[in-house]
Image (cartoon, rainbow, N blue to C red; front, side):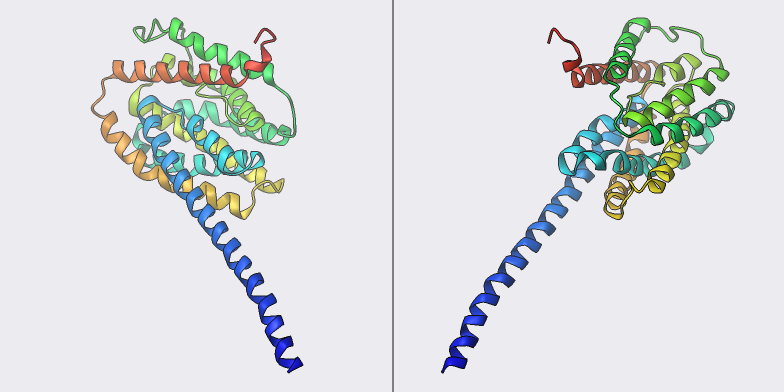
Length: 279
């Protein structure tokens, strides 16, 4: 009798434990599935819009990753997603890449990406992001609200130092917006040529950053998986975006790109609003 009661008591203890275990397991699975769905939707929208404006996808993807995962996940997850998305875009528009510009861009960008990723420790650079935001917002005026084809002359060698600065700051503070877009536009690249060349440039930066994050132990297997979700969702978005882009004129693309540059600058300034003591 005592043995039977003891057995029943043990069963009563085990069942709640098993129930809680499977309940928690179900919650984890549900959360993971929802995270994947939301990342997929955000990535598709971001890459589609960036196909029409020459960039800007991180401004949709970064807040979503930060909301769904955790702050340390943002650089490695976004870098992985950007790598695969830009790889697909580079292959799709391979024939439109400006190789002279790319040869100038690569040396500085590789060095800048390595140094920036190593410097990504806890360096407060609010003032720098404010300056970047102001520069981006000023583009709408220097380009005459999209009516001017060029606001300042850009030579191909400009992209050697520009590539270093962009890659360094990208590795250091995560995303700095389409800071080089005014340079591409002033160099004379629009539509497919700008997107193809920029994608090839950014691809090199993200490959370098990803290798560095991996060497520093910041790129875990779950982060890699979430980054792949972002990258896979980019493929159909890029394809559809290119179909729409073909129907846009150079002037429409330029105005859309400048609008994105300005919005990106406003976004950065708003994110750093606490920097202004009078706010």
